[in-house]
Image (cartoon, rainbow, N blue to C red; front, side, top):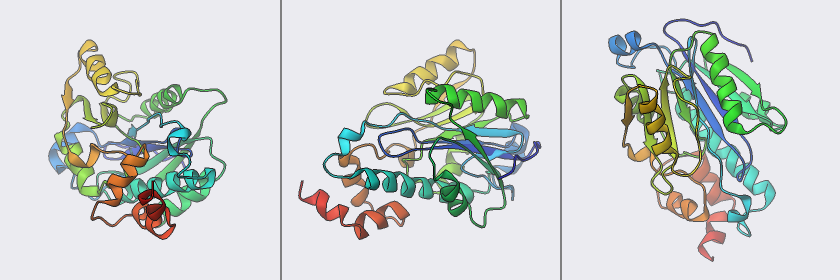
Length: 273
């Protein structure tokens, strides 16, 4: 994985990958606003799970405690579920023409294999940030965002990896709604932040957790930045609990997570609970 050079038309993304019950985050960088206005996010520049040279995006969320999945999933199944969801988010990001790179914040031992598989055939660059011992993931994200900004990134898209149903079209719609400052997509269940677009990347601190959408919007206002809430169905429902998994199984979509839930027998197991 290389660290790409910064340009005025490329963006990068950050993904934080851990097992379910831990933290999973994607950071995406976006093209500069002048490019957005002229290209309407339809240029050939790849929009990765989110990072563009000169503009990086990041995402992070604290996950539900692992006990929320017991006795439904084993430890290995929790890890596999997190990997499948990350693959789906990477698929959407690497196929979004607005994203040109991917950055990952992780301490998972097998993250390199996941990155290689999830970005196979992807023309953008990737960068890995290692989470520091005892570091709060919000601090890690802030550290990565500041580093991206120091490399010329002007805009960040922050996504959690537990949004397996999103598509490249959903990402384009979100970016198209962003003008400046902070744009937030609220989680329907707990009011968290299922997507953040930040211009510049350090315009506000990252305040993830329950009800963080309101905190992020208020932080933007306090900073004198534009605060916008974007309501897009694709970003409203993340997969944190068994009830979220039941919802996912009811969807008529093609994604790696859904296919694995069915082939593994977990969907049948869930139906008996």
